[in-house]
Amino acid sequence: MKKFKSEELINELEADVRKLIMAAEHLQTADPIKLSYCPEEGKWSVIQVLEHLNAYSRHYMPLIEKSMVHLTKDVSAWFVSGFLGNYFVSSMKPTNIFEVKKKMKTGRAFTPGKGVNVDTVFKEFFQNQNKLLGLLEVARRRNLNSVYVPTIFSKLIHFKLGDMFRFLVAHEQRHMIQARNAIKAVGVSTDKFPVILEAAKL
Image 1 (cartoon, rainbow, N blue to C red):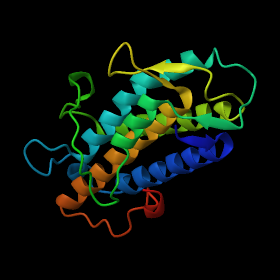
Image 2 (cartoon, rainbow, N blue to C red):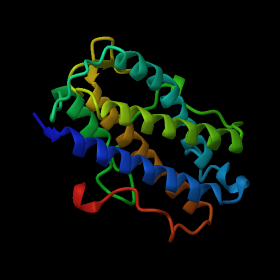
Image 3 (cartoon, rainbow, N blue to C red):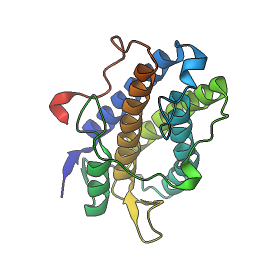
C-alpha cells in the first residue's frame, strides 16, 4: 500500500487547496456572462463546474466532520492508504495539467443546473475551501488511519480519513482544469491561470 509521512501529506494537501483558491480567485475576475456560458452543448460552464464542487463539499464535509469526532488523540507519523482509497484517488487525480483524459459519470445529485448565481457559487466555494483547510489542520494532530468516511460509490465503500482528503483535493484539481478549459473556450486568456498541479508529482 502507498505510504505517506502524515505531516508531509497534510502540508501538501493544504498547499493544493490554497492553489485551488487562487485559481478560483483568478476565474472570479472574468466577465460573469462568460463564467455562465457553456462552451458547447453538453459541457459545463465555469460556474457549473464550481457548483458541482460545492455539491460535493455539501455532501462530504458533514461526513468528514462526523467521522472526525471519533478520531483518537494519538498521532501517527505515517499514513497508509487503503487499497480502494488509493485506487479511487489515482483514478480521479489528473495526469495532465492541460486536460482531463479519463471521463467519469456524474451522479444526478451532483449535476449542476444552469441557473446558478455566480456570486453565490463563488462565495460558497471559498467558504468550503477554508473549512477544508480547517479540517486538515485539525487532522494534522490526529491519526489519519483511525477513522473511515462513507463514499457515494457504495454503502460498502469507506475511505480512511487521509484518503478522503486526498480524494476530495484530486476531485477539485480535476474539475479546476475543466473550469480553466471552459473559460478558455469562450475566449478568455488563461496565460496567467495559476498552476494547480506540479508536473513532477503527476
